[in-house]
Image (cartoon, rainbow, N blue to C red):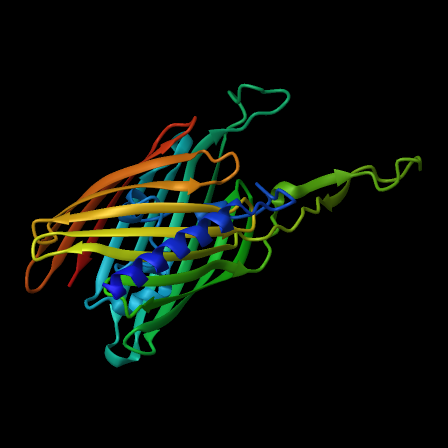
Length: 344
């Protein structure tokens, strides 16, 4: 009885900390001031369906994104594929391949890619873009992760990423580091996770599109009025994000399981928020129902509720899971994600 009371107290304190953490707004609003914003888009249909509250529950190959410290809890080699129909016909893809190395830890390779498709080039002379042609824009990140268990209850991990964004003939690149830890508390079914994502270099766009002809000194007559020059663009930070979360297996029997999680988020380009989600596993981990809410208490948040489901098949040699998630938006169209996981 005393243990249950202590457990409830710990969960209550965590929720209060997350709520106060979320409502402590920055005095300066830095919304929209970072590069490579695609790195902040949640990946994995299972995680998205749980409201993006996954830092202490990422026990599949998507841990390379959410919390690399959890990669070492994978028992088999796993391949994960995700496709997302994002806003305005934008496509987001994610691939992760994780493989345990026995007592040496776990290594994972991951790729995140966002494509906006071809768009018409519009100019003052051709505002409809009928004669000028097309251009494309996109972003991608390639990551290498490593995780190691320090004790039976504590694991750490990190992800090193190369990040690139391009538009037409110009590009910006950078490198970033993610780090995460997971702690399995003495309380049954409770896990605490912490991760920091996208700590790295600033990004500055450069390329042929910034080449212009300039008159260095318009006050002088007879000089060259078309000297080649390049526009100097600003350097922007990556979207640094700190996540602190707790997962709790509120119910676990031979046939079903209910897992709850709440995460507190502290980004460098938005206000703090709290995300929460739940996963109900039925039929001995064969069917899953999930739901959640993203970015509670965030100032002018566009995000709303999330929902999804999953199916899992397991044999002695392979395990296959397919997940679907829908994330509602306050004013824009909803987001759809579908994910496939294969463990062998």
